[in-house]
Length: 451
Picture 1 (cartoon, rainbow, N blue to C red):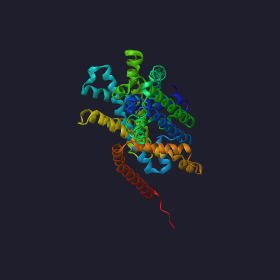
Picture 2: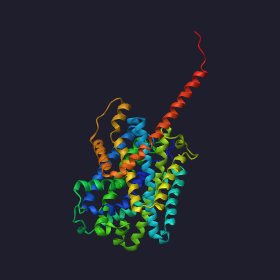
Picture 3: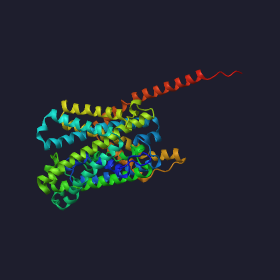
Picture 4: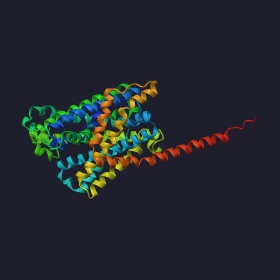
């Protein structure tokens, strides 16, 4: 990948790789086990959620075409609803990013332990988890160009084995595994609502190409194309992959599986297939960590430049990256890993909480942005277009996913959002004081005018 003459480092291939790389992570290759209790309904929900994700992606694409602004969901929310709403979305979106890192890194560690059982003790697992997080931070500190190139390599390398399972596996499926539509015993609507956040977690990242807009070549065209292309690739992989895994592994086994895709590959190709998929999972995790690390510096940087986050987040290193934002964000992720490692709660409880927080904190910006185009266009173009059908579907999709996230993640997510209010007040106070000092200084140096 080369840098264009205008200094932009990210083209169509890199942006598509960032979108696919951020989406196709632990939420994908662990999902067949999570949705297995719901039988064939899970496949239908994957398709419906994919359609909703594409509607959201088209909404972001339209916003990017209208005004390609650095910060993605934050930038569009601020333009449409004002500073305070923009701050809350930046704060929540930032939380969703650094709470996602431990989930992905822990999944990476799980595969490493499966390959190297000597890493199975708590201390070694914690060291591996933190090591992969900080290794990817170091890659991103080398610059956006290095991060984009790394995203392309890891994304396209992992698509081949996962795509092989999702496509070739269709020839091996046992149709008797699809005899039950909804064996969970829950009412249909409740089952749908429960499946919504489980599948939505795999779609998080659909807006990724809009965040580093300042580094995207021909952003007005590249961002919309890469967003729709990336979501389509991921959605196809999700649906076909789930069908194959459910068709190869009996539901009773799949429910308790910790490596459903590796198990499915083992049914088709034996131990060699399991090993290849395990390596692909490692590459997938690294790629997802790389994409999210890139974004967790860009979002607070954009807010800091607008005076809504502390100025520290806007500082760029000699390589032109928001190094402090990445380091601070990774430090919070490190704290979550240590809490999980040495806390009294079990892994499953901590994992569910982090997944719930990530999904809830990301879906709120989606809801705001789904209807933002009307207000942004009104301010930019001098006319207020109607809300399109796609935008209305995207809004309903986001609200229903938020409902399905459950009471506990929504409660904790709301508390974390409210904790950002003092930061906003502090920043506004500092901005006001700076303005007052500048005004006073100007008045003191202005020469007196005699009458």
